[in-house]
Image (tube, rainbow, N blue to C red):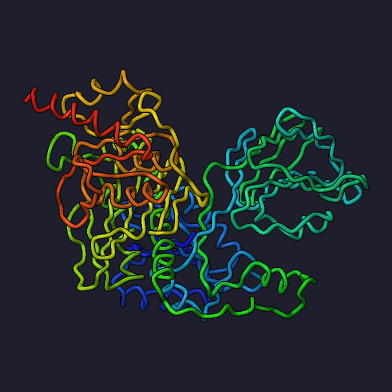
Length: 565
């Protein structure tokens, strides 16, 4: 995923190796951050970042050194949810791929939101006296004998979930992530793993005494248990954690729930270049090629919508991590009434999204729930609800979403709705169809209201529920107009009624629903088009087949509602 959230970085926090070259890099960092009004804190390798880390600031972790310094950064930054960028001042670095000469250019790419964030699988290990996380591997190996001629092998019983894998005889085992030592895997005739967004684990025998034993790949969800028959040494990430095991101790290893967030830029050596240079990868030798250039196309309406859609999807998905981190544990402020709340998460999400859009489209207008963010004379306006369903969100309910729409004059041409808790992304462009996680979606084909499932928004006195519940297969209310419209679009509901909507709540969802085949109107039956003004409007959406019956019954509901007034 492109690192749009990195465009809101406020502070750099660097872990620095003691090398002379690293100290020179720090001075360059000070100059670069000062020119951009960003903060910079540094600590030496071996020191904790706790004293200088500000949890309320958007922070980028930097390591200045080689792979050892980078692993130190992973240990300290990942538990804090901080993405890490490595600057290589070492010699044979494999994990760290930004050269010192590219320092300023790479950092500029990061804070402009043009870098990417790789997810790296970590592993969690528990044993007597140890509970740790590693990004590379856990090795369990024989205890070195006191005399050179002493026994140098060990036997380890290995279990995967409830299954017995077998007894491994040799110098030991490595349980490795895809980031773990490629050299160890190769020495056991194992595969090379591309570590980016790869969620497997590998059981690698070390100097095995059996010809038929080879590395075994399992899911990161697998629980691996290793039981030594004699004393053994356990090391995590090359000795960053180390304990002595006794016979019959149980070591439990599985994929960690939290990945490491590694920042990659266009100035990094890619994975295949790295293994070619460091390991002599024979498939390419010293030659590197690029894909044939595609024919260039002028920026027409289709290209504009496709690019805007990509930006909107990246911006929406970039706020997923921060929103999940704060979900259900935020301080709530009131905005206008008891049902209208705002949280710290609203502000953080809005900042990430608007910064990403400004970087790509500095001349476009931007309007959010909190007001006009940026004026423009162009025909293009972005409507953004950074957190639709704030009340749900503040109370730990998973039914909330991010809504982003691009209008051309007063018509939506791009719409994206993202649900962080389920990682579902609905999207559409005008004339291009509707999709959920890149798969085409369509509304239902039910033709009878009494066979249909309805969703409703705010129902002031409950009369809509009372008027429709017994005449349909039910009425549900999630508390998010954007999600209601997306469920209509993807066939999870047959109709939607919203008592009052605001443009940023529904602009994206209406486009997605219409592109999926829905009919969306106001209460008079006219096409819904309340996007240009900051007003609340009633909305009626359906699969189209039941719209007439729905509108007829709504008229009765309105008469009942007005009579009660």
